[in-house]
Structure formats: C-alpha cells, structure tokens
Image (cartoon, rainbow, N blue to C red):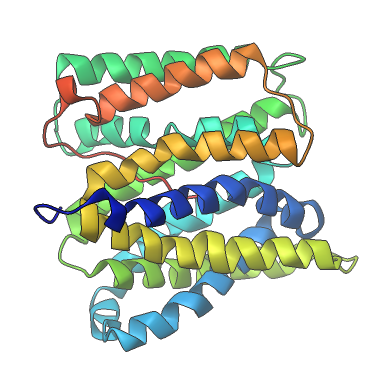
Length: 307
C-alpha cells in the first residue's frame, strides 16, 4: 500500500466490489434457472472475456498473455471454469445467504493449501483459525433447515459444490504464486477467462437450453458476466495495487452481509440462527487463518475470493 494513502481513496471501490460480488449470487440464480449450470458458467466467462480483452489491449499486456498462455489458461480452468460451474449449480438448491457464507471459506482453503503445497507453516493462531473455520462449515451444513441430504439434486451436493469451488480458489492462488508471479494481473485475469471459455465451450453448447430463456435470465447472465466478473476483476486488481492484498481480501466479510440482505429484502429468504452463529464462526476462523486480525499478522499466502 502506498504510504499515507487515505481511506477515502480506496473505500468507495472496496464497498462497490463487495456490493457487486455480494449480489452476484442473485444474478447467477436468475441465469442458471433457465440456462443451467454449464451454459451459465460458459456464457459468464465469455462475456467477461469480451469486457476484459479491450482493457488488456489498451494496457499492452497481450505479449505477456501470449508468452505465458499455457499457465494462464490452466489457471482459468481452476480459478473460473470449475468454480463458476459449481456455484451456478449450488444456487439452484441453496439460498443466496448460505452460498455466500460458504464462499467465505476461500481464504481458509488458501491458507491450508499454502501450508501443504508451499510449505508455509501457519502459526498457532492461524492453525486455530483454520480449525474454527472448518468446524463452522461442518456445523452450518449439519444445521441446515430440513437436514443435509445427498440424494439426487439435494442440498448436500450443493454444499459440496461450494466447497469444491472455494478449494479451487485456494489452489489457484498457490498455483499463481508458483508459476505466474511475474505476469501482469490484467493478463492473468483476461487470459484465465479466455481459458475458461475454451474449456467450457463444448458442455456449454451441449447443454444449451431447449426452451429459449426469457429476458430476466438474459439480464442475470449479462450482469454476472460483465459486472460481477469483468468489472469486478478490474476493481479487484486496482484495490490490490492501491491498498495491498490483505486489506483487499477483507472484502470476504462484506460479501455475505450484502448477499444475506439482498436475500431477505428482495427474495424473501430467511436468516436462521445457525447461519448467523456458524457464519460468524467461519468469518472469525478466516480472519485468524489469513492474518487479518492484528495478533496473527505476518506475511503469508491466502486464498482469493472470486464468485
């Protein structure tokens, strides 16, 4: 972070990013209900690619993308293709609030994978944070209304899909630190969306809906692609440049608040006491595991949060 940088210079973009990512669950659901998970994810990354590509060309980062295209495209599969499919499936069976709380586990998986892969041994407080966070996930899942079920198209598979997505985010962070440290962030963001677009093209076309989606589904798709992915990436990397990764990562805590408020006020969802209590436990564990609390602050890798 630039020395002496005032909070007024980064707070508006920080809040805007939280609002965008917090609302993305609603727009994903609008699209996925008619397009289905595969096509929703494919169209999302395709639209985001169209938004980011002109910016990449204007910033003259195309040579970097071409030079590292294999690693960047692989990043796109792990960081976008798989997680976006998982969330597009999960929002069909989980509330936006529940999905957003599970999304907050991304930094937990980032810390765990950094420990296992990059040998970044966590301090005692960070290890405690990981334990608390994952216990919160287990309690939240077991306390779901109606119980946790793993029958066909049941909530259990939706929960597992969210956790697969967040583990992919953590894996992608470690991967980028190993192979993409010298690559400009905009080249990674754009190239990863292009790579995800190619990876999802066949299933996206095969599962294209037989019945033409209505205008509401198209609106959800355009918003989640252009704004919640394309614009959000631009804001995300601008914030990292302005205020550093640790502070930008704290947007994790704003996303569930926004998603739950939208779920209650717009969709008529309810917030159970289990969601409140165990959600706070997950956020506390995340804060400890990522070093965002002062008593644990030290240099470490954490998982990114994308949705």
